[in-house]
Length: 246
Image (cartoon, rainbow, N blue to C red; front, side, top):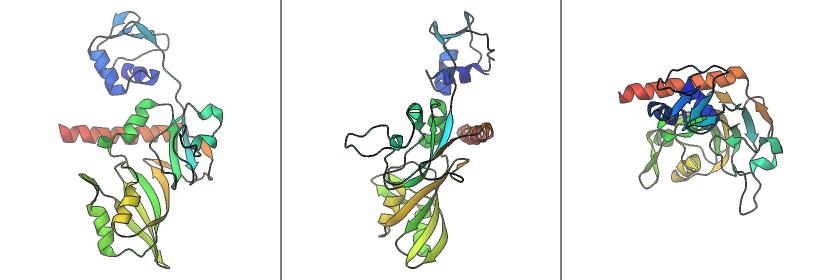
């Protein structure tokens, strides 16, 4: 394992912060300062940061189907039900990757991998999130185009989405909306701007992870293949971003 990844998985810093620690000469392997970012760590190696021993954590990854009526937090001052009311005590160490509001349902990734959480939620890394949204009106072509072009839902904040109309019947519209932003209640505010209301909102995919196969309130660990695909997806986005900024 590369030394920056090892430090990140110890939980003391993100991978980028780990790079800074290494370059600053604050990292040692078996007592020797290491400044090469690609240095490979072996199982028997002892790694220290500022002369303090660090250990690589065993990370866990889960997907969870949040039902409507629960908030995405560990505790709530108002006494509202949280997703942790549905999860065993052993899952308390798992943190949600992003949030779904109380009235929304669907996929939430849970993990103790802070580096992954950062990469999946940081606004500069534009990870896709896909939702099925039922609206209380038939949306026009012009309204769908407005959603795609962008709407100022708050002063200085432009929200946009890729939108596909799946069904339009009985004065309702079923949409598939893909977001690359993480604004609070973004979809609801966009629909309200058009003069309509959201009847139901469900997240069905986050990056490469899908809701398929889960029942409401159920959670399952991600398979190693799923974690690998997720990391590959993120790395591609980060690499493209770095090339664009070069």
